[in-house]
Length: 154
Image (cartoon, rainbow, N blue to C red; front, side, top):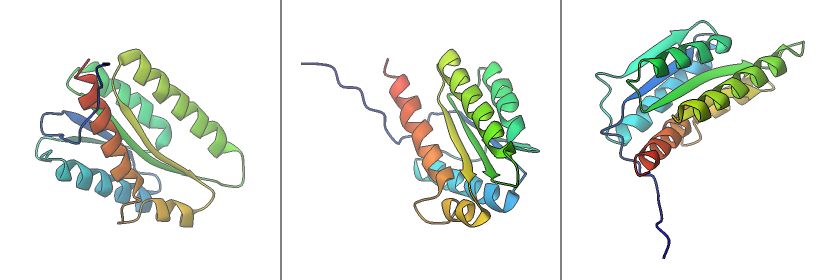
């Protein structure tokens, strides 16, 4: 019989860092609130949680890498909002950030949740950052909790 490994939603013992963009703050603050709700729901106290606010989504990988370098974290949650504008800027920005975060996750063997929205318009972004269960910040926190607890079993 194979050994089956499954992560849990118990975040009590996890050290999680959050990097959140200030750009499009009407969206990103809601994503942050969703992530904090999820962490609390999973038993993680917020008193000693580290949240780094960066100017924009482009700066998220830099702060995530710096957090990882401290070796104090079991997982990192990255939150931002890239909304389509009049140029292709959003596509280049999104690809660069997502590829960098994925590479960092694999290289460091540390879960990094990409709760960075890439939407066509502000209405879509606000819908994904709503106060209901579809909040992508909440989902991002749940993802890193499950992956971090799974990695501890290896």
